[in-house]
Image (cartoon, rainbow, N blue to C red):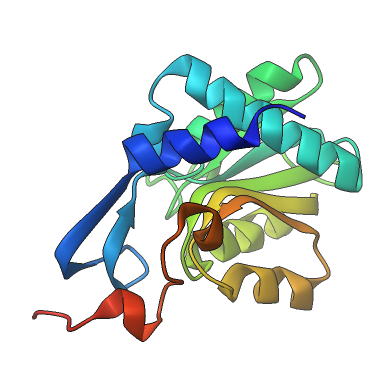
Length: 195
């Protein structure tokens, strides 16, 4: 297996920031710990490391997939890099937050999804699972089958429960435990939010 410890060190060193006062996250939650996976994976070699680990973990769990992607912009770097590392036969896609207002007016860009396509949903960091759940709904509307979901960092326990209810295997590469930070939503993490 590719070097998981190197990824943990990389995310801690380049992607984690701790603030005195909590900051608001995209999920709406407050946290003193901010994990910026895009920053941590900005170097191509670092993005490749994460992609190799993800492919190994997902491949061992569910086997092959035809397309990889998720909600823009959190999933984009992960999807592109996984598609490149996986090689021919794996395409990337990106789910818009809303359908395009001109041209094709589609919501899913990149790979063409539909019946018979096996999809891996990805995200850079999951807090409550809202973004990856939104992508799941958009992919299902195409008729494609989501064979697994994965993230580089999972900040809590919400996504595992969500995908457990959906019967979809879920593969977080790193969790809050690996980073030595409190789970999202815990009193230890939130402190007193400033409005």
